Image (cartoon, rainbow, N blue to C red; front, side, top):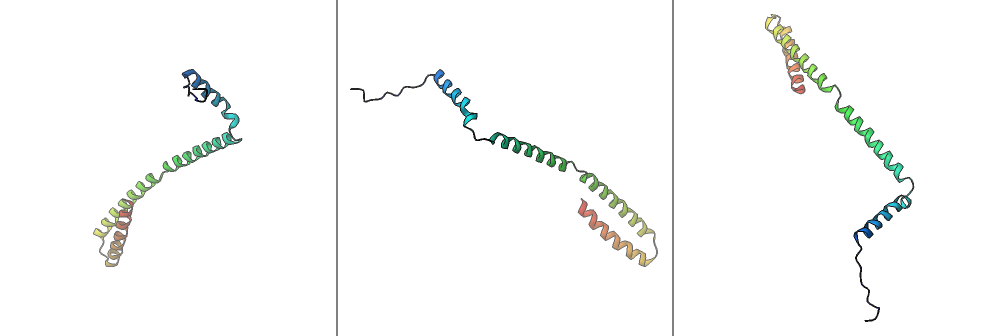
Amino acid sequence: MGGGARVKRFLTFSERIARQLTACAAWPETMARGWESKSVEEQMENARQKKKDAAAAHTPKPVHHSRQHENLVLARARLVKDLETTDNPRYKQFLEASLVEIDKQIAKTE
């Protein structure tokens, strides 16, 4: 068999490592210009967005919501007390309509 057959030789561990290191060393030179700055800009934008999202999550809406609910419950208690003590039929009608409206608002805040 004369020299026509090629024998595939497996690389040794050190040869594989040497090839990988060579490829890694050439990597920045083969990379397109501006790629790194685009990546940094993207990371900075992601960080800004995360900060905005975190700030939006910590808004005082739940505190405002619970205070509003407490105010409505107190106003309802006052209406019930006034409704029990009044003798004026027009005022009773007004208080009953107000009580219905406050009950609707309380149901929305729960």
